[in-house]
Image (cartoon, rainbow, N blue to C red; front, side):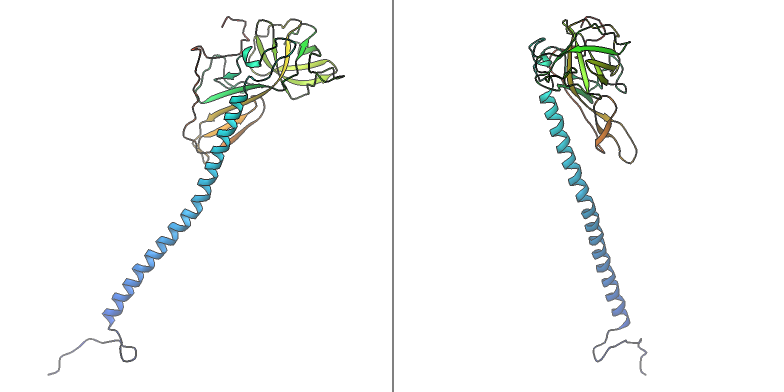
Length: 262
């Protein structure tokens, strides 16, 4: 009696049985799945690598920018008034955000810094009349280094100036308008409102503000940069921590604008 045998699928003279075909098909599927996994991982890596490189480049650029501004903070001799670098007369590295949208008076932060640099190493005007901030109009006279024939001593609308009296009291203002030797000044942040006497230095400055803006959206927390007035721009997204350490006097530096002893 002849035994029964299952069907055998052959191609030519050396075909494969159906079980063999199923086994080989399974092996091929496993191999293909592995190849697809490798390709997908490769695509993901190729997408992530440019983003990582971009973040590294942004971090490097931000670090260099902050370092350069820190090194330059307080530079610039105030010729004809104090004859000293700006940073020896008033604090120019501040642990908070200055400006109308800045931090409240008395704030001290480790994730924010304001850096003030003399706008020109040789230009300093002086008040030829007492200035009352509530009036907003300052009359100046040219000092050493001012452009010849320029009654406004090179100051232009939109710029920033520090008014510094002989006692070292200082307030930060924006130049809103220029008409000959008359400047329209608007306070950049909280000030005491006290008047400045004749002879007060009018120093053009550059203000740079860096701080961490907390966020949980698509961009996460961001390192922000601004001029302490009207513009704030994100520099780097998805930052976990930004910290500044100040060494020296345990009393945090502040512009001495409130008429209170520091």
